[in-house]
Length: 81
Image (cartoon, rainbow, N blue to C red):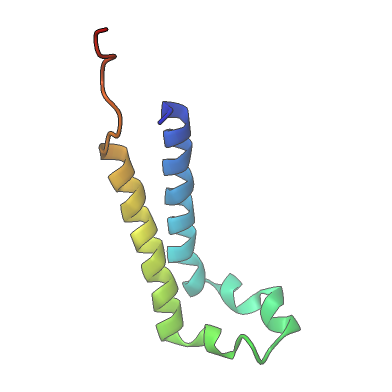
């Protein structure tokens, strides 16, 4: 995999994980436009279990990004011909 592509993928996964970890517990979660538009469908969004599940996905995403930092998929050198 290309190094630049891998670096962008790690940064994107880490950022998404950080946002999923933080946003359910912030004030923005309760004042989004989706819950104002369709109040019946977002009734379960305010339950602490749901917020914890979303934060858990964020933690898994951060751990995935950390795992991608240390892993290598390709050979280090070009094999001799």
